[in-house]
Amino acid sequence: MKYYESITIAFLIVFLVLASVAVEKLTQIKNELIKTREACEAVQIEMAKMARAAEKYQEWILNATDPAVGIK
Image 1 (spheres, rainbow, N blue to C red):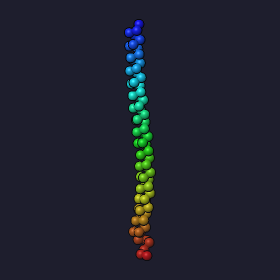
Image 2: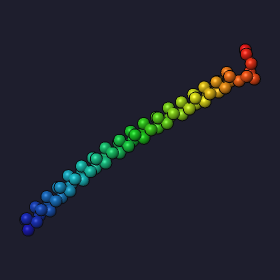
Image 3: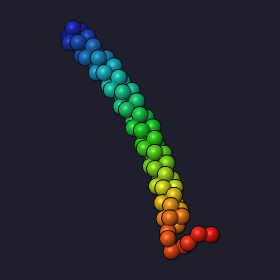
Image 4: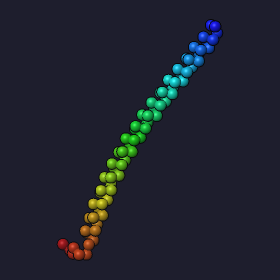
């Protein structure tokens, strides 16, 4: 009977070690996903700023080259 108890305890210890490793890995993956999402949001904000700047520049070009405006 003692032999079976030792095997059961050994399996439980191995299971707990593997479970703790898995939890640690999942926590690391979650943190990386959060950082990636934050970086993507920052990139989207910068792209929106660049798009607005490009629209303003395009409007400026159109106004500067509009023959109807004439020479000032």
